[in-house]
Image (cartoon, rainbow, N blue to C red; front, side):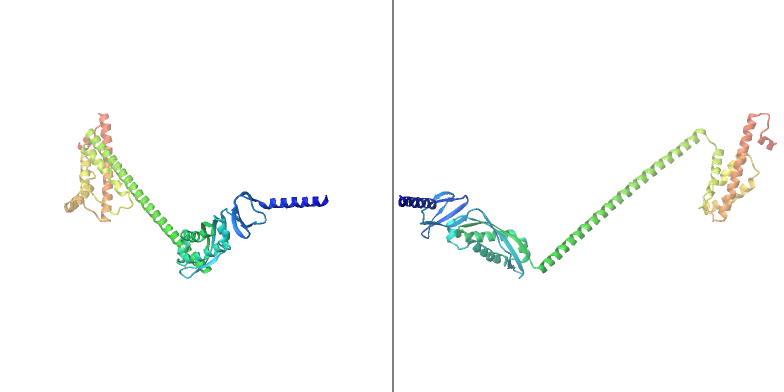
Length: 362
């Protein structure tokens, strides 16, 4: 019995081993290459798969998801003989597990070397400035070359991106100086534009201010002239309405003469030719002949000057004295005229009192 039990146990173990060896479970997004006696047989798909025990074995296990490979910075010489360090990022995906396992020994190293050589060919035909500003063109050319070369390896290159372009330190300093100069230039231009706009706006504001002030002055002068014209018209109407005679007009004419001497800035006076006529009218009207000699003297001087030139301009010394004397004489004549007018008014109220004119006549 014991040998039979041992044989049964051995047979059971062998059966379990064979069953376990024949069953292969492949995860999702994985591919297994199976070789039978060292020769490629087939590629296992995700799920439960059966293989021939002992004869079949799994050679490679591949991930068919999109992979990311970042290369180290590599020195590249530009067309203007500048050395720049460029590192790239590669996005690829295995489309044929058999070709990826048997067409190339190490597909990652092959892709890396192919990227470096292609990048040197592309960058070698560009200068530094074009290299820094043509990343899209470089990426598209790299992708086209890599996709064409890796197609027979069962790999599809989806994207190639340049992660960094590192120029030499001296070139960096020169670029920084150039950028600083450009920024200073733009700042100076903007500052000049701002000052220009400010000056234009200030000039326009000053212009508008001057125009408004001139318009205001014009309106004020027009209103002042209208007011003076209306005042003169009212005075003229009042004089004609009240039927003023030559006596009152002559008296008002003489009444304004003393105001000519009130200004401190007057160095000479202009004596009108009508002054003697006004004085003669007042004195004749009130019958006062006591002050006739000074009046006649002033009249003679005025007539003499009027005969020479109408309304003369006297010199600073003699004209001032003559005008002062005439003004004083006019004031005395005016005071006498006022006194006579008051006396006549009182005599008219009291008939028994004789008038001054009658007394002087008698």
